[in-house]
Amino acid sequence: MQPYEERLTAPRSWWFASVLVGVAMALIMLPFGTLPLLGGLVGGTAVAAVVTSAYGSVRIRVVAGSLVAGDARIPVSALGEAEVLTGEETRAWRSYKADPRAFMLLRAYIPTALRVKITDPADPTPYAYLSTRHPEALAEALNAVRQNTP
Image (cartoon, rainbow, N blue to C red; front, side, top):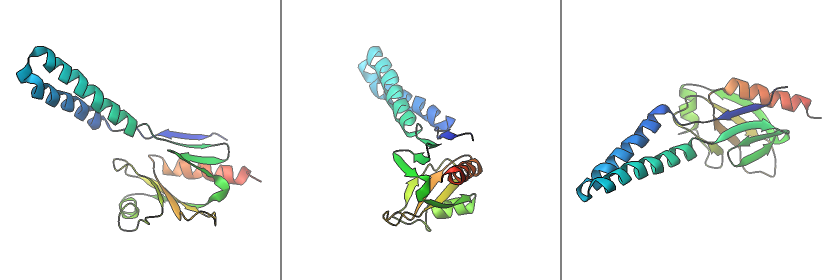
């Protein structure tokens, strides 16, 4: 069985926006001279790139009998049925159908998701909503781990 791992990287347009933030900072610093202008360009771009990278560095993994999504680690034994969401269903479950108690690893720039029921009676979280580019593969990995767990 191949473990599942995915990194939800930010889209290319966000990296371009990071450069634009640097240009904006350079323009703000323009009245103070050339050196502050260069500092604004480099500093603004670097700060925006760090923020973009941090937001886009979240990972989803299925390892050691657990689903690891961002900071959450959920044993597969506590998970129920997985539902692949695409199109309008994805938008519906992250907006008007969403339960405020749900665990949501939401990235709006990813058009597909997986909704996994949480069956642990001690956990008030009804389900986990995971933005993923490969919802079918993630569901298969969860099912494979569930079938191999005694």
